[in-house]
Image 1 (cartoon, rainbow, N blue to C red):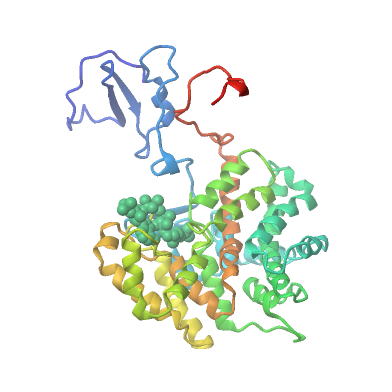
Image 2: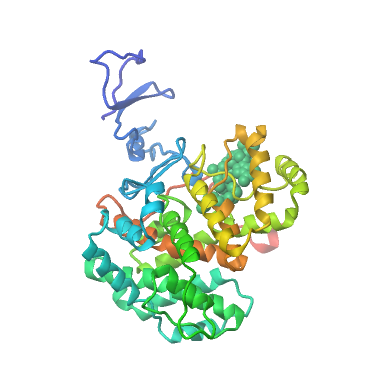
Length: 446
Ligand code: ACO
């Protein structure tokens, strides 16, 4: 790996002696040649630092705005092959999990690396269920919000506030403490979300019911009114459970990166989850499902779709719910969501916006603009339609994403903490600003 001052390489050889797991770089500024190790089709950016013209130079860096081609960690949680449209959690395909698993089981898998045994699942479900209550003071924070406060704003604030109730969460290198915070976070996120929803309606809060499933209880806290015992509709409960499975993790996306980045400062997991939730709120990430529904409402009718597509192609608008940084074939979650939508429509009635969505998809999949750019529906394209049919206001859509993603965030956070190669996240920059200059007194400035 030491810089070698050698003759230019001829390159391109494929014979056995030439084949090595290295990358040869020639610096054409001075003809120096470097051999850099390659592992998992990746070079280490730090190995570039030896490339310099003068001994006193800082050395070469890689420039990668938005991490388009940079692995920031190694991970064993989620696998995506964007070209083939593959998504797997811990080696299990998303299709099989959506069909056969439950959200709590999938969350266990994501967090622990293996599917639970019967006893492990019972124990995990018991602990999550018994950590769903929130401190009564959280209600006082909620009272401070306007009736029309966005529930994501309320969720971000209240999950951050949890850190003040659980100072033991600062003990991040204690496995028992991490387990406890995991129960609390996975257990309390639905309660915080449901309370935020009830606050916007001015309705009294509905407390958790331990007899119900994770999703059944969530529906109970959202929609229960005067009934003595709330009984969730099994189709809706199951549909929500599938959506939660689909949203549980998605490797190094914007919010996981926020979770890892903020968590790398060794802050408690509630504060890091608040940061991840904030990242998810944006319309280019978890806020996209809300944006899709607003877009479909704006289009208004199937007849208006061609005009809308035209405005997308001319760059005035985005076709929300289309495109993905990683999936360049089809988002496998979108296919499952589409099937799921019809099951919900069977119970709740057909959402008329589905026809607009289908027409957008039909036109876009045939149109050169979208085909060339490999833009396909992502998970958010159809989820909003399901949520709307289930009775959720659009502002709740990103909240419905944040709840299940919490298990993925915690798994990413824990993996980061236990990875000996990880340190506090601190990217470099290419400074293009002014060189040193003298201060000009105010009276001399024009
Ligand atoms: N509508 C129209 N054009 C689009 C769209 C879209 N939804 N998405 C990308 N494009 C175009 C871009 O304008 C660009 O065109 P150009 O090459 O002529 O400049 C090209 O496709 C490539 O797009 P990028 O923005 O470079 O792709 P990137 O990987 O950075 O962005 C993103 C991915 C943010 C998801 C983008 O596709 C987008 O904004 N989609 C709409 C929002 C959305 O649905 N987000 C949800 C993502 S899924 C999730 O977070 C759960």
